[in-house]
Length: 193
Image (cartoon, rainbow, N blue to C red; front, side, top):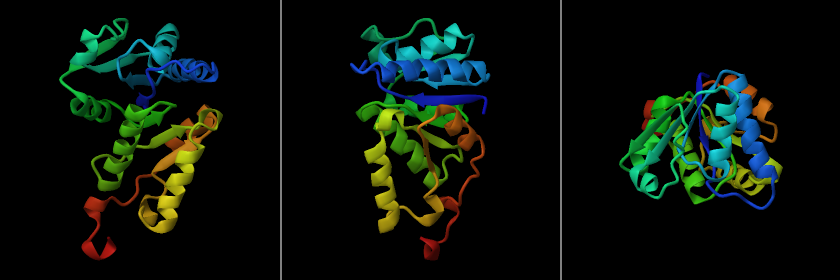
């Protein structure tokens, strides 16, 4: 994995564990020689990941919609800053430029990015690992819901392993590196669906 898309919030929660984890993620990726592709913001967890990766000598590619640049939230210190028209183009660029996806805590935008990465993997638009870093149990409910979708049959057995999750970042990276693509919906026949 040469580059990973990092999905996370632009907020700064009161509990310092979230910002500390974001900094650790940025630094760890830089030390492993893995570039960061992220939302291009300078605030919250986004800014913490970028700043830590840059401080450790890492590559940081920001992809930000022009409306957010106008709001002065763009991180101007990125290795590269791509300004795009909107969110659809932003997410397509994440997929194009990265070798996988890591989701840190965040809100609605982060969930949109995570579920699209999973959905695109199911369908066959990409065959890249999709990781979730379960910081301080933040994603316990989401993981439980994903397991519920699997157990009720809304996620096929072939796709049950798309979401890779762990509480430890190093372990998550190792599991993502070991990921083997599954059978995609585009390659399945109607009787397999």
